[in-house]
Image 1: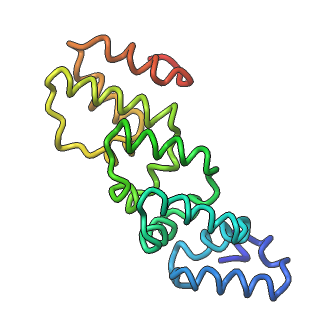
Image 2: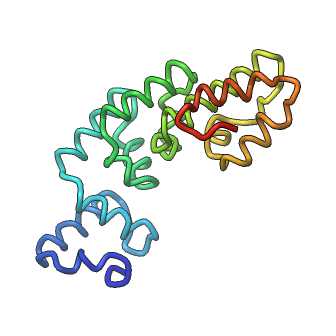
Length: 180
């Protein structure tokens, strides 16, 4: 698998490659896991210091080390995201969207999404619908944030034509996106 997908890992010194493999296994990612190679590549490019800084950052939001490890195993690239970006996303999701940090730990992919292009605009649309009395309680934040753009538009904008201001709200909130 390494030869086929990440041949540059092979040019590493044998000791460095062995150390990286041990580091991945030490974090609970089995060699037989589909995430092993992906995690190996991420950890090869991220220093131990950066990894620990991310661990401490999430502990500051109440995550345990086990929460962080579970999130990391699902989404290794979490440690490649800048702490500044993660800070902004966590503050938005916790303070504005009302997510408990413990809700986000098993759903780390949310933290890889664009704050300006996805998280904020979609949250504003859902909040706008709820404020108009539309019942969308069966949709969790992780589901509506994960929908492809077309699906989100169909479920939360196009079917509520009686609220034309939603399209404008969505376009304003996602100013970097092409207008609808």
